[in-house]
Length: 428
Figure 1 (spheres, rainbow, N blue to C red):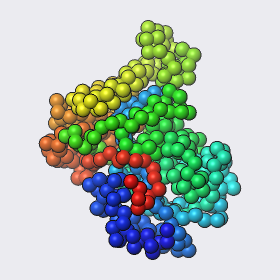
Figure 2 (figure 1 turned 45 degrees about the vertical axis):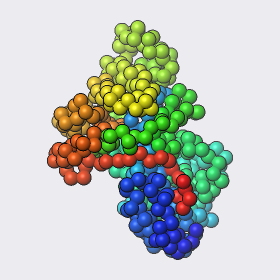
Figure 3 (figure 1 turned 30 degrees about the vertical axis):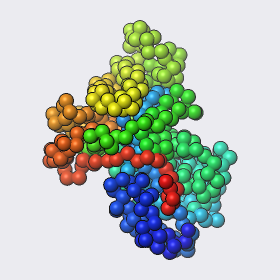
Figure 4 (figure 1 turned 135 degrees about the vertical axis):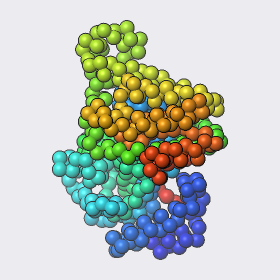
């Protein structure tokens, strides 16, 4: 669509239904957000007139903490914070992405090999997504894009996965003839993060961002994960989802994250397997002495966590679908305690004096005990916790937690019904 035509349509309220569908009670601020992004795009890429809009949400993990990379089950959901893009095709075989607040990334599609110098950069993610498209035989080509994000970095809401999904959605729409499914786009994002970016992540983050809504994902066959929408109207539950940002950074935690799949894998290897999902739980429990002789105690404890949290996912799904919210909340608390005691990803063992997540969990338990739920959120070690707060306690909880961690650190979110999408006036 022509820039002037799109701006006119936005100003006349043409996208109101789409924004309401995607953003709920935050929809009123979206028109100006998209108009500002269009102006920024036009300032940078002045020659481009035909543009399209795209969006990919952040995600919240609800159950299955660090189970995905062991081919386990998870429950996750897309949220109403997202990365958006204004994009236009070019004929130069170059992808240029200007992300707000960052230098321009420029990727020549004639060379999609892994670049050691790009590790841990957005350029690596862009190159990796394009490389996987090409390897799958899906058409690729150049485009110019401006992106802006309100997905909190280091929040456990997976801003990097949302960016990967966004790049995949743009390529799929502009050059791939829409051939790829949401799950395939998620798998491409994981490839980019693992191989080009250099982070050993599972597939949950990308799948939740690409698919959206409340979903359970069974990764027993990671090449064909079983994705199921959870039938729940959580908005009518009487609880609010809160993500509390404790201010910690994930910047130096790649090594801590890497030890989790490594140690879980070491337990699986005792039984001649690569991942824990391939090991029958009763066989693990019957052979604990053998496992302990071959692995560290922490690895054994992390396996305990995997088997228990893997079983909680269908239990939480059942509780939600039956509107048994007390049972659901109890399972959330169980999962959080397992992460704290057995998975041990609430603070790095190298810096025990810094325990923002532990403090936030202690405050939350004091206020919400018997009425809500609390747990570590996302990868852990720093960043955020997740709480389900009764609406009647929301103001008191937010006031108490922000008194410690600062104004604006308690984020009240809604669940987004769809994942990465090409934004159109008639999206619904």
